[in-house]
Image 1 (cartoon, one colour):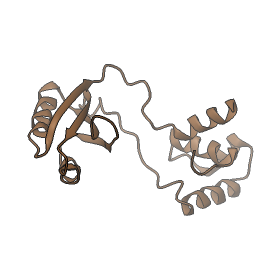
Image 2 (image 1 turned 135 degrees about the horizontal axis):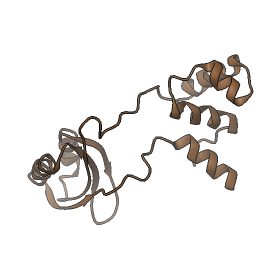
Image 3 (image 1 turned 30 degrees about the vertical axis):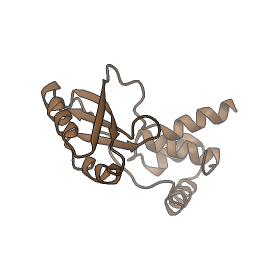
Image 4 (image 1 turned 60 degrees about the vertical axis):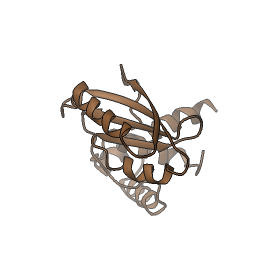
Length: 159
């Protein structure tokens, strides 16, 4: 699981995942510790690189990004490195992973509509080195990945 964190650190991170702007005082009160304890633990988590920054969570639908699709991409041998660089330039690309197996890349696209998604698919298919693509449209988002500390806390409680 990588670096093991103290339960208290995971509790702090879980609260920050829900509201990165939460005042130290509120987090301290909720966890029953001093405000200085929260400050020092957050500072330590930042120094260790566990906490990389504070961010906002956007509602993609309110921003007009109604379509989510995943694309599996098979690349020609010798073109993977070039394709890796070209994928970074694709519009509406919000995640990209080089993977193992029959396909070489898994990318996540969020687009305003099916027409825009179609243009992105055409652009990806036309990239040099793309042999094959498989398209998977998302019907419902079940988990969005912004609750890592909460998941670790839950798993730790089961183990």
